[in-house]
Image (cartoon, rainbow, N blue to C red; front, side):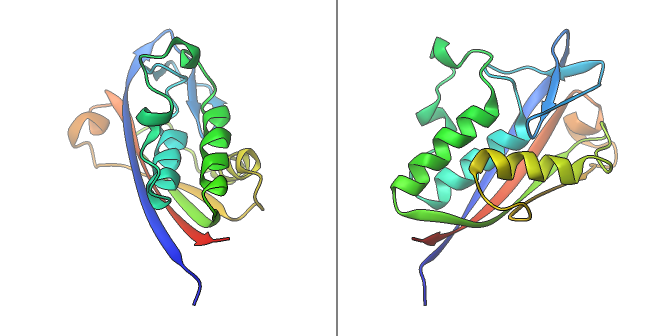
Length: 160
């Protein structure tokens, strides 16, 4: 049997005025965006943590600290590519990943496939290995009050 590992990533950011909204590498037409040191892309950040966690390499903050100015306004897709390169260098390969956006808005039903494809392209893996969907919290908590968005991701790795 091949060696398999699962990683779980979670991220959340506040919605703020004057910032573009980027989710899974796609800029979305929305009146508010996510506050963050990089582009605030909670979906991609959760996926990075899931990949790094599965490979036992730490977390997004240990690779791309928010105190490092070189990552200010960075594309999270670039960070994803760099993180996955570390995962591959450690001898692991992605089997599949699933990402969940948590929030009342925006609705992503018409673009969720494109979101998964964008993440897969950034990783250099076949489309279909990365999927994205969304859920609401039925108006509960900070996401329910539309104060921010959260995301969770799970990644399954196999030893190369």
